[in-house]
Length: 271
Image (cartoon, rainbow, N blue to C red; front, side, top):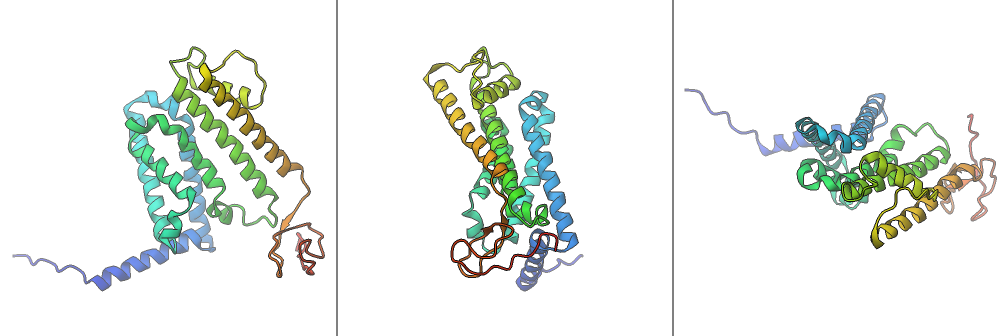
């Protein structure tokens, strides 16, 4: 008669949990080549998932295959979120971040696609959370000494995310109920034409709510375009914290802090 193996003591389980947490912190927050490669792999998977989100309105017609891929991605995203939560120093602080709640909502749309598919356009917010995350810039953008590339990328991410979120909303709301919106490309065409205030007029949304949506798209689009142009054309700045007042952005050749006059020792970019 075989013996029943006793359960491991709680101290052993706790020690294994601490080792796992330390390992996850090393991978998600470490600076070693192995940790950087791990985060790069996670980022590549994230972009592949975002690509699936973009194609979801078309792939949805595939039926069972779509749902299989949907649940595989849900499993990957759930594992990633659980690992990030476990690796974070303060779970409550992690839950306070808006990006965390966006990712949790994206996960909910993946777990319940039959009920939440009409909210699937919000999955594209994952692109915004990724390109605005410290996780991304510690991995990909650590080689940049200034904030110019980061600011342009974030501004572009906001614009692209807005375009595809609005496109998804228009497609989910007006498809088959408005003769001008018969496919995803029609919704994208309307969004870009409205956002750029081109106003061809061949596709317009009906009713007062359609007009309100068009106004919101135009105003927000112009704002995002101006922000992108500002980040591209404004004078070049670098990130160097002032030891006295903490001001981060300075001219590359600045000798004194503009805020408090403290003498700065900004290293040359080529150093």
